[in-house]
Length: 201
Image 1 (cartoon, rainbow, N blue to C red):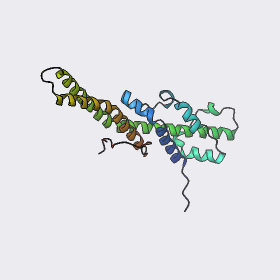
Image 2 (image 1 turned 120 degrees about the vertical axis):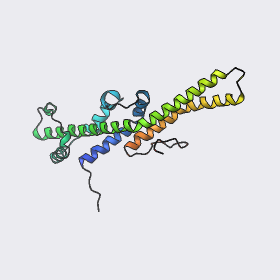
Image 3 (image 1 turned 45 degrees about the horizontal axis):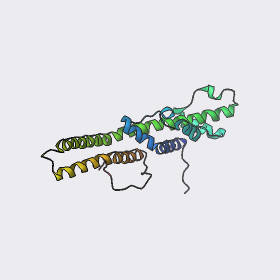
Image 4 (image 1 turned 45 degrees about the vertical axis):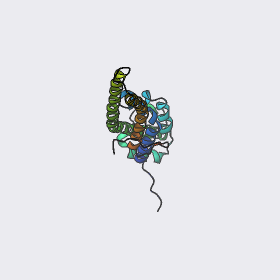
């Protein structure tokens, strides 16, 4: 039995997921630097505006396709008639459909970003706690360095704590990348090294 063709709503959802994957690195960067990812694709993501317009809005539709799309995505319908002012009725409907589809993808992107922020909170909190623990441990050990209480065991512990702190940022980035992609049902894009901690374990 042939596979049933996807609805425009399903296609928009797939495109929103692909957009999350495309901007994963920037999403992770914002999570680390700001504690949450922005949903403002046009202003807060490098190349976001052009990517969205060229990939999701700049499409052509037949009259039947446009009518079907507008019916399936009626809750995202573009109503700014200035976008198709002066066009023929057929072209106007196709233009309205194109912008309606763009709205649908963008709205679904917003929903995924909101979920990513919720899902990432546990990971961010965990690594913030680990960072604080390591910095406290390093500070304590450095306070003993050069005193009569200083031992080779403490020296090894200091080196281990400093190394752990250096690796923490890399581990956080990898954990957040997995979280972002898992939110849209995708696997990490690159081969992983040693198994990382996951808050879901």
